[in-house]
Amino acid sequence: MKPSLRVLVVEDSEFDTQIMVTLLRKGGYDVTYHRVEDGESLRAALKDQEWHLILADYNLPAFSAPAALDVLKETGLDLPFIIVSGGIGEDIAVASMKAGAHDYLMKGNLHRLAPAVDRELREAANRASQREAKKAVIESELRYRLLWETCPDSVVLIDPDGCIRFANPAVKDVFGYTVEEVIGQQLGMLLPERMRSGPLAGFERFFQAGNARVRLRAVETVGKRKDGTEIPIEVSFSDMMLHDQPRLVGFIRDIAERKRAERELRENQEQFRVAREIQQRLFPKSAPACAGFDIAGASFPAEATGGDYFDYLPMPNGKVGIVVGDVTGHGVGPALLMAETRAYLRVLAGRREDPGEILTRANGVLAEDVGTERFITLFLGCIDPGTRGFVYASAGHPPGYILGADGKVKTALKRTGIPLGMRPDNVFAAAPEIILSSGDIVLLLTDGIEEASAPDDSLFGIDRIIETVRANRDASAHDILQSLYESVRSFANHGPQLDDITAIIIKVQ
Image 1 (spheres, helix red, strand yellow):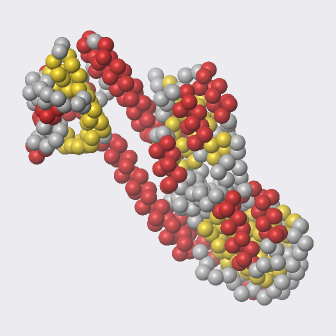
Image 2 (cartoon, helix red, strand yellow; image 1 turned 60 degrees about the vertical axis):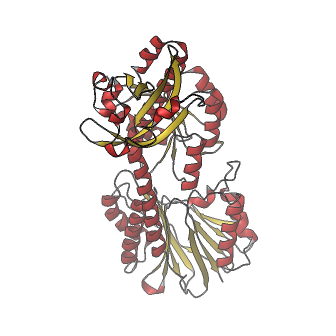
Image 3 (cartoon, rainbow, N blue to C red; image 1 turned 30 degrees about the vertical axis):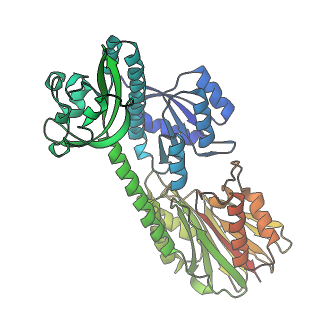
């Protein structure tokens, strides 16, 4: 039978919730879940039922992972708390871990979800076992033994001569020795030869008269298994009196899996660095010279590199292509997919003028490479400098806007199709041509601006975006873009940037 798993999901998207539940079921769990979106619902769920695990999105419209973590702390429950976010910077992730979160994953990269849940459930069991073991020490030797023998960590009881007087069954899992093989032996047998004269083996000083009570916690060192293999271990000691005789209780944990997770984190950080370099090198260095138009574009990368993309494409008959896109996920994969998309669009736009046809052909190729976990939202516009005509197609991208000389919104440039990579045979059609007028401003952007959050978790939103552009409409395209970015950062109180901020401003002269 599959192990049952009761999951409390802090998430405003039922779709994202279903993805996580499906992955856990594929990972071997019989999952029961309940989804909440605010603090009141979370408190009620924690009070009414028992849960094994909490999965929390970092940003919700009226709630957040840090707020959910505070609610959990109020209850005093020790539940694994894993943040699953669409975009979270390294600083935010580290701060969340320090605040009590046990792990964080990206929604675009959930292959680690089941292993992370496995690990945190084991860690929660370990913490519970240690708490119970330490409580039992105070009560009686009998309860000592009963609890130690069920503890997943290796537990040893040592006398003043350094002799092991008790060991629980987990000593075999950690070191490969049976309980009978270690009883009566020196603690040093569990350490490499070179370390047997070090601080952990010289514990006899703890028994000297007049020493304060010992609380040596979470020391990382190296242990040696029966077969000679060296393993990373974490050791903590506490002293006690047993039958009026001093003893040391040692809790020894194999931390090889944790070390592997730390290496994974370092590798992810290196991936982010490489992805950032790839991303920045592919952005255009300057706007195109287009008679009658003032064009400016920029992408301000988040701390955790995403897949935002913008570009200017030379097209036949002197026309200019304008591209803004967003690849789901973070790291090297999205950055490489962005580079692939850029290459296809440049080749296709060099021989075609119809944005719908270009996206149709690009989608047919990209769908083979994207896979089921990713997709690309992309806006492709075409400017005719001679007629001031503007034609576009939008593959699931957030709407763009055209503002008139008076600052009012004239047209919303809505989606004309689904994101790229979802269906290889999808056909994209361009929207009807729009004739631009002097003083018009075309605004194209990714969702990083609209979804930027303030310290109170409110979102910047489209209304603030429009108002910022309207207030600066007499400035150059570059200055409008800079004002928009500064407004977003000020709104976020210059906190960690969770997503790339990318936009293009086109002013009609």
